[in-house]
Amino acid sequence: MADETPHESLPGLLVKQKLISSRAFSLWLNDLNTPGGEILFGGVDTGKYQGDLISVPFVERVRGLVIDFSVVLEKVDMTKDKGEAVALPSKSSRVFALLDSGSSQTILPDDMVDEIYKKLGANLSNPGMPTVNCSLIKGKTTLDFHFEEELKIKVPLSQLIFPVENAVQCPLWGVAKSSLPPFNTIILGSSFLSSAYVVYDMDNREASLAQAKWDPKTSNVLQITSGGHAVPGIAKTWKGLPAAGKTINHWAYLGCANETAPRTLNEGGYVAANMTIETCQAYCKKLNFRLSGLEFAEECFCGNVLSNGGAVGGLGCDMPCQGDAEEICGGSDHLSIFEDTAYIPVVNPPIINGYGYFGCYQELPDGRLLSGPGTAGPNMTAQTCTSFCSKQGRGLTWAGLEFGRECFCASGLPSSASPAPETACNMVCSGNEKEYCGGSRIISMYKYLDSA
Image (cartoon, rainbow, N blue to C red; front, side, top):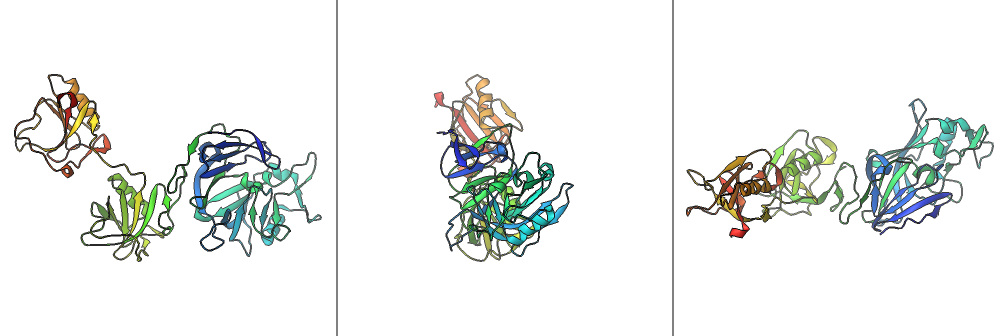
């Protein structure tokens, strides 16, 4: 359901609220000098930000407990009009900062604010409200807020300086010192949040941020689904190893598993000097496996189940990946195990084009089990094959797929037809990697249902 009734959510800011669900919500304030904004419950609007959404965890202020929307602010620096980067040194540059739309100002450490005043040439004759040259509003200078995971939000001075018509000096209202009452803490208020698109995800105890678009011409709302890390559009690399159960880009980290003999994951693998968590996941996904595991810093293994007594919950995953020293790729006889939560198993479709799946059959040692017309190609699927056979007429009620790309038809089976184990039909279709099209001299067999 949706509620689009305008209401005053922030001082001077008209916000349109949309309700999809209440598991998480997105905040978009728009340019503070332009009325309008949006709070979207249970959804993300990809039209209102640019670049990637990157997630950062909420800070556990009490051990094991997240009590507010604080995140780690690594540093703040400045980019001048001509692209010159200017450092803003501070004794407390890495701080906990509260994402608070209820605060209009952004509250920073005193020495950092003093550096901002200095770089902008602020007039401090009125300590409570310093002023700067009004021309800065139309310039390109930004304050750049850096977070974990290489996340950076750029805040133009137009969001920090209050415009005064026909004035030379304008109030620099958007930043203030943390020592001033009643703050005594670091707050990223609306003067910062106007430049950030923020998704507050309470279930996963994290915020996802990206650079906001002002007055976008398009809207594209995606629903936040349930289970795991479900905010759509997230782009984030693994750093080290997350807590068990954490999901990024639909891969959930299950934990550290012991290696076994035969192997815990024994259905595919490779070794590479540039191994990372992402490259191993991509390899296993391409081969249609649900699980990926990394071991000895450079080894990748795949499978659909943990076999031979392997189980997660152990210790020993402590080796940096050969391809990225900030990631962990298992350890000595231990695997970092990930599960593809978007995995779709490969199947023989039970019914397709009026044909029912009849089982896996052996090809004849000399000749064809299905002796009628045939076809082959790079786009073969069960639908393509059964459609081909149905159009041949002449009572060709049987259709079979072989070698991943071949299709044959017949009106009947010889008495020598012999079923094969279902596991023998193990070649994916050339036109659909989520379907089996027989195997090596093994046929995925279909029969027209009206003739069954």
